[in-house]
Length: 336
Image 1 (cartoon, helix red, strand yellow):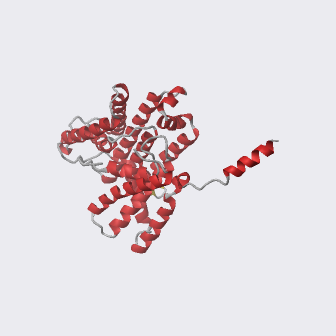
Image 2 (cartoon, one colour; image 1 turned 45 degrees about the vertical axis):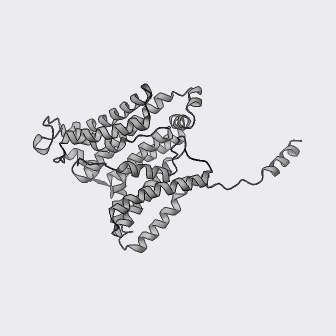
Image 3 (cartoon, helix red, strand yellow; image 1 turned 180 degrees about the horizontal axis):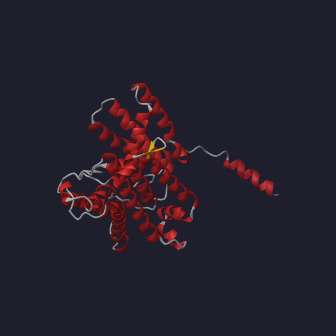
């Protein structure tokens, strides 16, 4: 009797339909392979180990910002201020350590305090964003946009528009050293992304992010402390931006007043083409990381072809629009 009822149902359902949206996380893998082939054709140095390692190191700071932004987007929010956090967090920490002759504040705290202060600044910025959004009920977009502008101005005031130099060796270490033949920054990104993928895939806290971003009221009804989850992920995003600031400072050896300027566009470009939904509740860190790699390869190929930086910046906007169009066609859903 059971079989008699089951067979007609299966016949009606038919074979499962192919939907591109199901494989969106892997959609960039063929594109990355194509870029590797194109790069090898257009430039003899593209596939050299030095060039590829340089691409990975240059993308390490961006990837940490994308990691933080992806977690926040999955939870249904966004944080534009990550762009300024990568600049002001190391700037303030170093200004408290270096002498006034090196454009510091002249307080000259012990050098070992620089990294803890930097991470604390990132956490405080994320926490303040959470307070304004969750406790005062302000728009997350406008709050973080205002925070981005305010922090950029504060960094300019703090440094008087000057580049900070004589950075302590302990602060430069992670961004300048290599472990097992690869920059330490690359290893740090791999570990943090692996930890994030594990948390999102296997732990209750990770699943809570998807639940909150997918349907906040349903998540609250299921017993999830929505505000606590969003607040925590904003703080994590701020700390990841501060770590990215440490790595960038170590790679460059100084903190410029414009450090991180314009990176938020790359962050959203990588997240969107990696399949992260701007409406929350969808996307994976593997997809976001693929987006980072794709952007890095595109930029590297364009630079090897001596394409103007203006066109490279324009390409990020074009990539975002193209990714939105592809997502619209793949999912069949109107985007708001």
